Length: 146
Ligand code: DQA
Image 1 (tube, rainbow, N blue to C red):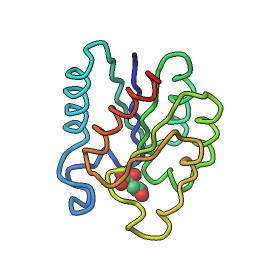
Image 2 (image 1 turned 120 degrees about the vertical axis):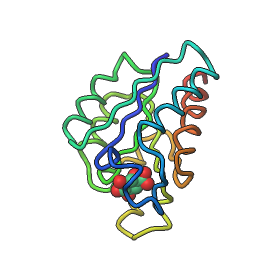
Image 3 (image 1 turned 180 degrees about the vertical axis):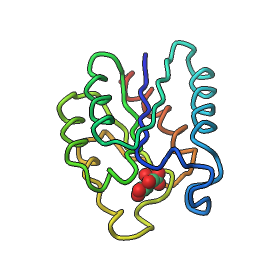
Image 4 (image 1 turned 135 degrees about the horizontal axis):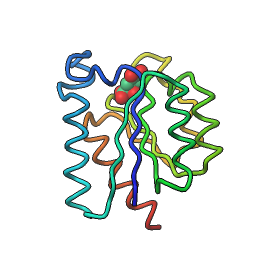
């Protein structure tokens, strides 16, 4: 099974971006942890791990997931709070999607408390740093087997 990990704007800056909020791991280091965990769980799990600063590119990748990915793990970053386009793409393709965040968005500024995508996602994982990505692999495997 293929799991598609999508990362939104500014997540390419992880490692140096507000380390007190987002930790010191780079996105490449998080990707390596995801790949290690997936390999240990099931060697047949295929991980596709991408980042874009562009809303439209993320939407295109969600559209392309139909029929090619068992689940999407989405850290939409700031687009979580603004993007009807991402929400509509998730609804349109019907691929089970797990919303994730490094930080606990509910413990932060009020504009981060609303997610436009959460209502069309299977579930949300937030606040565990890079571990949010690892928890999401387990969740993705569980929901795709159910
Ligand atoms: C984030 C939380 C968002 O509010 C923020 O805009 C991000 C990262 C997180 O992973 O904690 O860029 O998605």
